[in-house]
Each structure stands twice: as structure tokens, then as C-alpha cells.
Image 1 (cartoon, rainbow over the protein chains, first blue to last red):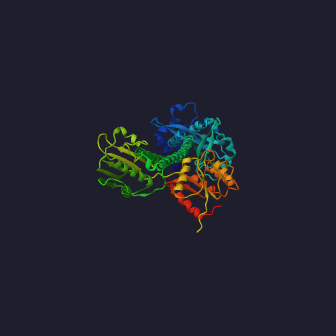
Image 2: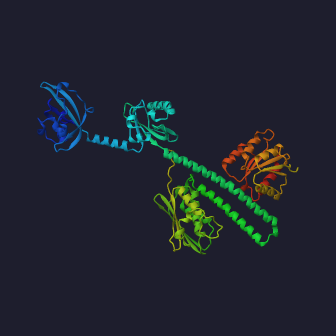
Image 3: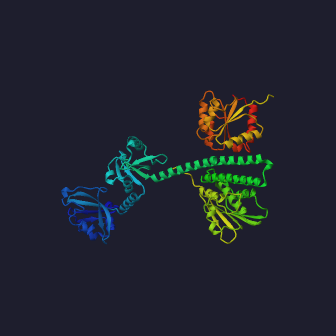
Length: 473
Length: 142
């Protein structure tokens, strides 16, 4: 046998027309685990499992005159069996060889285990993908769909294969779509469609739904196949609508609060002032005292409205980021903090500067430190501020040696308009709720640590040191 | 120096306390001028057009306008005013508690002379009185 055949990378066998083996090459021996001597003069069917041997024109046609050559690649996929009985997928090509001794048959055998495995993996990917996958020919005919596509559009696979892609669009868009498809054909590239605008698809029952599609030319395919990956974005769409609605409600609320609550309150304040002025010195001490109490309450209510507005705005993350040095930030907060001289302050900083939205962070820290002083029940106290980097967060811990927060109240303090101090005029009780909202709007969280019956409270602010990139999808 | 040109003020506000606060605030700060009060836009138009049964206003005058009112609000009043060929040159200052950017922009589109936030001219509108006194001394009204 010529060396070319002996060392060919696929298995080669030469047989008589009746299948008797005359020759095998090294690769065939290796592939099937037989030695050359074992195979000579044996029928070629030795190489396939028992169950395929009878009544099956396996490798060859019985009649050499009817013999149809069959190239590799277009050859038949079969199962081979090794000397040890194990099976594996093979592809077989057959050709006839005219020799002075009559017709001989050349069988070329390739082990396609790897290819079959890749095919199965591909199949799984397509079948299991959580999005619709559609492969389309240049003329718009569908050649492949996965189960998600069937579910999404309500058509069966059989109904879709071979039909035009346009059936998946509302009728009003079909004509226009053909033009888009031709454009794509001329300049194929990976494209995302419908991310920024509304793209509508149509189910078999005529109902429509919003989709997002990515178009991918299948490279290396001369016939210009295109893979369309389709996502049903109904859920996102509904959520966006609800969110937009909620935002506009919030805006209306904000307006109502600023105008419809504030202006009557201003009127009441004016009226009380005028009564005071008109009475002049004629007011009895009780009346004067009560007018003062009314004024105090008006001021408090005015502050509550301002706080409510601040709370409403706190849900919106700021976008103007600057470099912030934790040391400078804490120093700035203490600089303007009103506190009794007897209060001791300790600051421990083990954190690097980072880029973030400074104003909300500063307002949170100011609020927590202010609380630690304001809610302290003794003339002297010790407040410790610790800042450290933990993973992608900068953690600010503000601890005091004040009265502590009883276990039952720990959840309540974060709710709006809850305050534990009595008869207070200094604060509306929105500070913690506001701080929590500010922290969360910027991707962090706020944690309270206080043990019932033990003095002292600690608040931990986990503030992200890195900002998520804003994507426009 | 000649004495300041006298003018009248048409105050358009549905809240009688807010209106009185303006009247008191101006009086307290020694800005004395006739003030006519309308409790919404349509009443203000009647007064300006001389069709109101009781109230009249003498020229020259300027308008202090609240935006948020029942029936005809400040914007509707402005639109109507600018379409009236006898009244379109009227000097209007918006006087409001609302700080909304959108409202401010919308008001300026109707060619108002200024957008005044009550919170910026307090206490007791003394800033407003000062401003109008200066304004009266310097500006010739139509």
C-alpha cells in the first residue's frame, strides 16, 4: 500500500465488492483497536455493531454496477464498533476503484465523536437559551427556530420553518421591514435593534408585544445566514411604565407639598403674627404664650414639609461625582457641628480617597453625627468615627456612648417621622429615614448596631467606593 | 429730582390672607399706592377691561400675579392678557411660593417682567416693598 494511504489521517479500508477486507491502514487499526491481521478477509461489517449488520446495505451496494460514490462530508453517519465492543459515531465515504482485477471498493472512515459532541452542545445551547433564536436565509425564510421562539410567538416549529420572517411582525411593519432586511444584507454586522426604541412583534393570535433583537450574520456562510436573537421585553417595558408613572406621581406630590401645603401654612403664620401685632401689649400672658406655641408649631410643620421634600428628592441618585477624601469630609462635618465643649471626639481613618457624589454622603454623615450628639443624655460624651475600606465599600462607623436604642425601637427609627426624643422641636424625626434613603439610592446600605440594655449606638454606612457605569441600553 | 411716578397695583391671588400679607407688607414698608385685589384671572381681566361691576384700576398700573388659582390660573390669565391688544403691554410680575423650574420658564415665555419667589423677598415681603419702591423711582410704565 502506498505510504500516502497508510499514513492518511482517516481510516481507510479496501474491500472486494462483497465486502471482504483486503487492506486497512494504520489509522483504521488505531480507531477500531484491531490489528491488521485480525481484519484481513473478514467482512467490513465487522466494524459496525451486530444490530446493524443484517438486511442493511451498509458500506456497499450488493451490485457493483449500481454503485453510487458518496463523498466524505456528504457521507452517511453510522455507528462503529471497536474490537472491545465499545461504540462511537463515524462518517463513511465510499468510492469504487477500477483495477485490472475488477472493481474494488474504498471505504474512508472518520471518527466524528468530537463533531457529534459539539453538535449536541450547540443543540443544547439553542434549545435551552432563555431567548428566542431564529436563523433566517437572505430572502427572509426561516430555517431554524428554538423552543423559546415557539413559546414566544405561539407558532409551532413546523409552521415557522420555511415561512417568511415577516409573519412575526405586525402587518403594518411588514413592507418596511423588507427594506431593512435588504440593507442588512448589503452591510451585515452585529446589530442590536429595539434597545432604545419600541420594537413590536406579533404572536400567532394577533396580539403584539415589545421585543429587543440582536442580529448576527453567521460568518463564513456563503449563503448569508443571519441569526436573530429575540427577547420579549414586556416585563421590563411594564416596569418602566410603572416607574415613569411613579416618578410623575412623586413630582406631583412634591409640587402639592411645596405649594398646596406651604402657602396655607404661610397664611396661618401671617394671621398669627397679625393677631399678635393687633393685640400689642393688650394680650394677657396666657394669650401671648399660646400665640408663641402656635408659632412654634407652625415652624415645626414648615420644617416637616421641607424634610418631606428632601426625602422625596433623596430617592434620586446624584450624578455629579467628585474625588472625596474621607479625612477632609469628616473634618468638614465636625467643623460646623454644634456640640457641648465637654464632648470628646475620636476619628480613626484607614481609607483612601475615592470618587463619589459628595453632597448626599456628607449629608448622611452630618445627620448621623448630629444625632449622636443631639440624642446624648449626658453633659459629657464620647463620639468615635471610624472610616475603613472594605472591598468595594468605604465603611463609616459612627459610635457614641449615649443611651442606646432599645431593641423594639431599632426598626422603627428608620421609618419616616419617628423620633425617640421627647418634646423635641429640633427635629421632625425624618433624619434617619432620609439618611437610609440617600445611602440606598447611591448603592450602599445603613446598619444600626445597639444592644438592648447596654449604652451606646453605632451606625455603619456602607458607601460604594466605585460607581457603576451608567449604561444606555 | 421729581417725585416718583405714582402707580396702582393689581394683585391677583385667590388666597385672601396671602393678598392681605402683600398689602400689609407694602404698607409697613412705606410703599403707599392703591392696591386692587382680584381673586382669580378672570376677575383680574374684568377689572383691567373695565367690565367689573365694582372694582376699577387707574393707569399706570402693574400686576402682581399668583400662578396657582382656581378657575382661571396665572398662565391662562397671561395668555389671555397677551392676546388682548389693549392689555398686551401690561407689566406683570409673578409672585409665588412655587420654585418649580418648569413654571418659571413657562411664565417667562409669556413675557413677564420678573418671577418673584415669596421666600426670597421676606420677611413680611420687605424685600418686595423695597424693590417696588426702587422700581417706581426708576421705571416709566406704559
